[in-house]
Image (cartoon, rainbow, N blue to C red; front, side):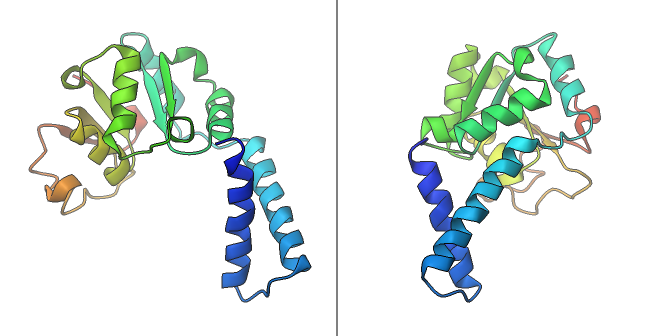
Length: 182
């Protein structure tokens, strides 16, 4: 992943510039390199943490093992975790770019469960993306808390199940401060 990501980022910026009407050539390559470098610099500069998220991790980690399951390149994701201040509170970190499979694929959730030593039926996933977080958790038999940020649950949830159909396994919280695992 470490060797692949820089070339991928450069090519992604080249494709974006072409889609915006730029023609191939040395200038396009130079601009793609500059945009890629700017992206990495901004990623490394820090990320805003959702209000209440660190308190939630702190509260949960006081009583249960906590894992972060995240999609993205390992260097950027580890930096985000370190910058947020939650790294010392985590029992496991599973990153798609290191594992080779991302959310919602069940294997990334199974890997976290294995690292925690917790069976799926005793685990709860907390996340804000219905498809990637909730869908992946339900696929392996976990319960889920969906942080809605005020959004209504989708009419059809993971695997076509409506939010009500999985209501006993999905709890909706407006934000991190509303999350309870009882």
